[in-house]
Image (cartoon, rainbow, N blue to C red; front, side):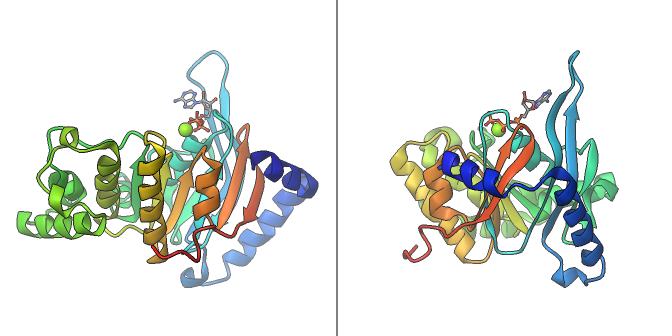
Length: 273
Ligand SMILES: Nc1ncnc2c1ncn2[C@@H]1O[C@H](COP(=O)(O)OP(=O)(O)OP(=O)(O)O)[C@@H](O)[C@H]1O
Ligand SMILES: [Mg+2]
């Protein structure tokens, strides 16, 4: 599919001069509308240069796009194209070298340390390929962990974790530790954790990358269900079938640039979840 997308894109790709002019006009008009009409996420001319080694690496180069509430965006592209770098920037875990990221009208780079911590904890739900659960904690404790910092009482945290674990089909694994869970179950706990503070959107980096195809299907249906219930999702995937099944839009990165950004009809749209 990537090849098809690349072909479609190269036919439509405008010279950088035109795209940057169009983007500037879009931003100017955006500043005239109220927050409720703004896109949920605005990525404006974002670059990220890593300068650790002798040769700087331009992981992202002038990337611009917006995401409206309710979209399911798949971000695809070859290894090293800048996908994780982009997600980390949107998630507030890293800062752009230049450009801005604005979420729900707030510019991330202008947030104080405390505001950024609040943003990461409450507005963003992160799902990783390696699940990233805390091994010494039970399923419910992992799910409720993001609530700890908000100073919520244990009874409230437990009740919320129970509700979320039930939602991902794991009510019966409430007290299990990650080592006592299958890969698919661990990812479902991680998804429950990502949802616990009811974030504005989910960021998923290869959520099925460590799973076999049957377990991967379970996660696909869970993500589909979460999206159907109204959650905005940005998902990195190497798996084109996954992108085909779930996404309402596919953005293709190559060498740190967007080479394709197209609306898409998700194959799962008409299935019962
Ligand atoms: N912390 C870092 N320091 C230096 N270079 C980095 C760092 N993180 C990523 N890079 C480089 O930036 C580029 C983009 O990396 P990134 O991890 O975003 O790619 P990716 O598209 O997610 O790849 P993959 O599909 O393999 O996960 C790569 O060339 C990578 O080597
Ligand atoms: Mg990556």
